[in-house]
Image (cartoon, rainbow, N blue to C red):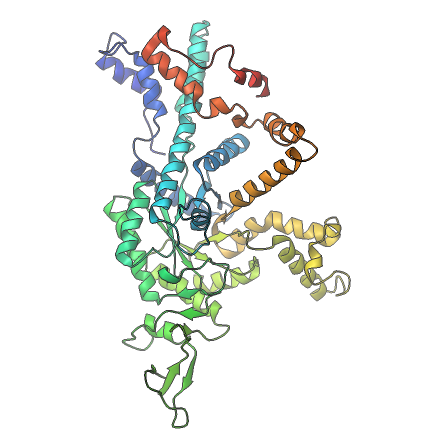
Length: 541
C-alpha cells in the first residue's frame, strides 16, 4: 500500500488551513482527518499501481527463499473477498502474502446475465471488470469500518479522560493499520478476441484495480475450461502478441510493475487452430509445427483437391486435419509443448509468471517440466491451480499406494486401486493419514521443488457456498429447524470471532452513524442506539 500521511501530519496540515479547528462549514478538523485516513485509496488505478509493487516484492522474496510462497482463493463476490481477508488478518495479524483470485470460470458460472454457463468465454467482458471493482469497493469499505472503530475508540478515550500514552497507543494503531486491499490476479481468459480486443479489455481490468492479468494460450472463440476436453491452442507468436498487448495496457496506464501470468493449456490440448508461417528452420513457428500429426505424401498417397501440405525434413507431408478444420498434435507431446510454450512466453512475450494447467496434482510431474524450463530461464516461477477439478483424496491416496508398492512397503492387494480408495473407512489407516499429511504439505512441497510462487484454489467459494447451503437446508427444512442455523452458523460465528455475526456493523451501520454525527451533530438520527439488536453480540468478541 502507498505510504499515507500519519494522523499527526494530517492534523497539522489541516489545522494550518483551519487554525480554529473548524472548516468554513463548521466541520471538525478531527473528523476531516478521520475521513482522509479512512479513504485508504482515492482511485482503483492507485490500487493497481501499489499492489503491483507488492507482488514484485513478494516475487523477489520468493526468489531468495522458496518457503515464502503466496496464496489465494477464488472469490465470486466482494463479500467473499472481504471475509477471506478479514479471516486471514484475524488469524495471522497480517494479510501479507495473501491475494484474491478472480476466476473466469466463476464469472461465467455465477456472475453471468446469460445464466449459469460453462467456462467457455460465454460471459460479458464487462462482468470481469465489474467484479474487480466490486471486490475493491468491499475491501475498501472493510478499511473504513475498521478505522472508524479505531477512531471511535480514540474519541471514547478522550471523553473518559484517558492519559496521553493511551491516546498515543490508539493513534499508533491508526497509523499502522494494514489495509484489507490485496493484489487481485484477474483471469482475462484467452483475451476475448484479437490482440486489440485483449488490449482494450486489459485496460479496463487495470483501471478497475487489477495489478496482475492471467491469460491463456487457447483460441478465444473455442475456449474451454482447462479441465475439459476439446482444448485448442494458438501458435506461440499469436500468444506472444496477446502478452504484449497486456503489457502495453500496463505501460500506457503507468503500471510499470504490472504482472502477467502466461498460462499454457498444452498439456491437455490435442488440437491447434492453424499452422503458423515458418520463415526459417528453428523459429517459433517451426518449433510449433513440428508437433503436428502428419502423414507423408507419396504417389500411393497423393494430395487431394483442397488439402494442405507442408515440407518437413525434406519430405512433403499432409497435416492431419479434423472434420472441423482443426489440426491434431502428435500423441504424448503435451509435456514438450508446455516447456516450449513457457520458455517462449517468458523470453519473447515478457511474461512474469507461468501457469501450467495439469490433469492431476503430481509434484514430481510438475517439477520435471519446471526444471526443464529453468535450464533456459533460471528464475522461472509458477502460479499453480490447486484445482477442485482434481479428486484430491483419490489422487494423493493413489500416489501413496503406488509409491509404497514400488518400495515394497505394501503389496498390491492391501489397498484397492480404484475409487474405493475414497472410502471413509480408509481415513484412519496408515495410507489415509499419509495422504492427508501430503495434502497438508502439498503447497510447501510444490513451491520448494517446482518453482511455484503462488498457490491458488480457483473455485473454493463456489463449492463452499453449495456445501453450506446444502448443510443448512438439510437441517432447517429437516428435523433440526432453528437449531440447524444456530448450531452450524451463528454459534460458530460467535465462538470463532467472525465479525459478520454483527451483520449491521459489518455493512457499515456504525460508519453511517459516525458520518451523520459529523455533519448533523445532535440532530443525527442514529441506528446504533440501545434498541439495536446488535448489542446482543458485544460479548461475542
